[in-house]
Image (cartoon, rainbow, N blue to C red):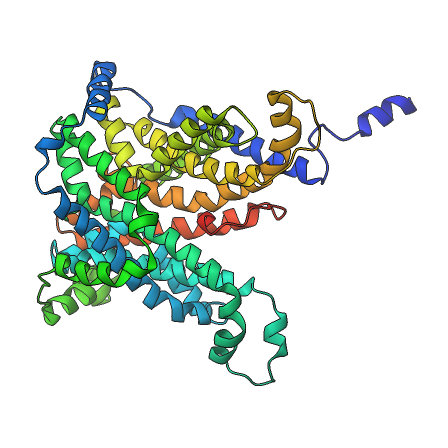
Length: 504
């Protein structure tokens, strides 16, 4: 009897408080939730012959039509100019906010709001006032990037050693403490993150072409939509070449030349009608019943909003599936680029695959899969999983390269299962939770391709000039992103060893 009681009292195979068991519970819960909800996702393939379309696309990438490109240098230059000045604008706005970030709840809330809305949605908002101009493009990047810079810079400054700060005389102001005790120690990490954010801005600048701004993405979307895959292939290779050569043309000593050239490419600048701007901000984006104090009318207005239940459900479901898919892709791909596996040729191929997937924006991948598979959640799921999984795999492989296995003579499978994976998995899961909020932001904008997420109804509101509806849906989208970001911070493993600016 005592033996039976002792057997029944033994904990289950996942019970316990060790870091490994906690990570296992996190992972299995996430995967189980995705499996349970998978039947509710529309993952149908709606094209008759996707393989024929895929073969045409592959031929276009393999044999790009360089001669058919019209003024590619202008599109590339505008893409770089928008990214550079948009990043600079976000830095100028976000840097002072970083000094107040930990001390002001209002600043933290404002930064959380502006970064929770995707750059494309900001572009759709600003284009109503400034048109398809450089002002729209720069504000679409600078506003959300200000919130991102404020948060990340504040975190980097907080992680700086405290000894120099404590050595200063009592009563030293915040600015003096920053200049003399924090900035010298954090400057390298601040610069590294700024360079990474500029790379993100290059991808975002391409995506702004989807709302009509004449960056590289405008020409890419047109070529893909019209089935001119050879021309689209040439444009894609130009973009990859732009990213690959960033360490050469993006050097610090060339920045003044790039900034001056960018000003020339971004012009002419539009004239802004102050009355029109004030009307849009103060009147157009708010329900008329709210401005009139008509609460019964406001309730009636709310009942005429699109069916939010399915839209929010699809947004959250696609975010969950994208997160789990990114986990699977990261687990499968990171060994391909790790020095502990394969040979030089296989590692080079694996590294190239990761660079290709992480450099291609999710919206661009989803657009290609949409052409191949038809309008459903499947193209969006594949795009989110591949892009974010490749980014996580790239960082995990770099972390694994710095590790030294302790057990000699193990085969590659044993080295993976018993040596490296247990050591890198906490960081991998932390990266996944860092990316969860980004994945949800991307999930919303994929509605612009016809996927029935919140972004579909937001774009519809702007198309039909229902600015109050579109802005209300933007607020709901921001609230969802803030909630997911808070949840991911709570679930993030505290023992994660990866420290990289790119995780943010």
